[in-house]
Amino acid sequence: MSIKQTKDGWKVDFRAGGANGKRYRKTCKTKAEAERYQKFVEAQLVATGKPWQPRPADRRTLSEIIAIWYQHLGQHLRYNEPRLRKIQRVAEAMGDPIASELKPSQFSQYRSQRIASGTAPSTVNREFHYLISVYNGLNDLGEIDYENPLKKVTALKQKDTEMHYLTRSQIDDLLAALRDSYKPETELVARVCLSTGARWGEAEGLTASRIINNKVTFTDTKGGKNRTIPIDRDLYKLLRARAKERPYELFDNCRVCFRKTIAETGIELPRGQNTHVLRHTFASHFIINGGNILALQRILGHSDISMTMRYAHLAPDHLQDAVKFNPFKSDGH
Image (cartoon, rainbow, N blue to C red; front, side, top):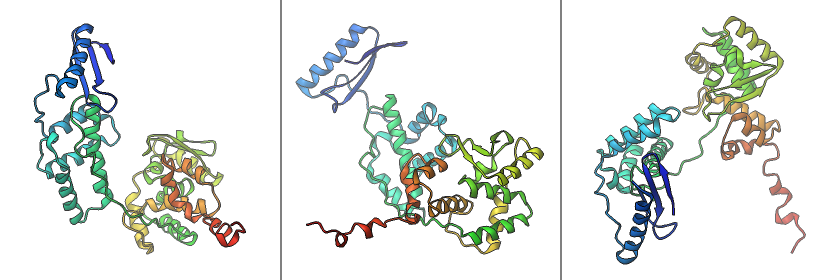
């Protein structure tokens, strides 16, 4: 029996009929009342199979529960406002249905329309997971008492994205072009990315206090954890010299300069991999040169090793065991 005293009274929280039974939550004035409530619910379920004093149907719309989710949970997430806007657009596109009555077919139809309009499956999957988190979060809080209506919907299958990386000659050409660009400091930002695997925004946001003892520390990262990466002495000297000129923010926004310059070099990149090609280039050369995949995971800040494993095929000895241990090399029976 799960009965706890709270500032509002005695809270009952249990599942009738075992771990897989329906969950019941109620706040009572006294502990005795809470105990009677739980016993009554369990007895009535045994006798009739019907719940005790069922709540009236929840007629709140999807946009209304999204607002409640944002108030309790969403506003505390990174990039909270962009996420809120995306979920609100999903609700609007589906006609803002009653949240408890949303059918998987409604979301499936919306998803099909998005794909037909040219939206990438990864974007649609992101919207799907955002919506799932709204229902699951509110259910955990007790704000809704029905199951997630999309729990049986599966995400779309996504093709592995092409990850282009620069050759050494392309790196040299690009850095030379950046050095001669209208924002020469763009070259130094690119060097940081190529030397540490940092995202462009992480490198661009460096301050003097984060460049110490031949190391750089990236904060406010996508994964929410700081990363400290060693760098060579030449790059360290360049960054410290820049820090003397601009101790608080080493760089202005150089992204546009980078995009224009890389276009001028004639380097062709897959869609969406403009500045990110530098991160891919670091990771790819790290593995090609014999780097350890687990070390790369820590350097890149990947929480899931599967993200890092995308580079594993570049290892010099990748899949060589297929030659060493195939059945023609065995004398077994």
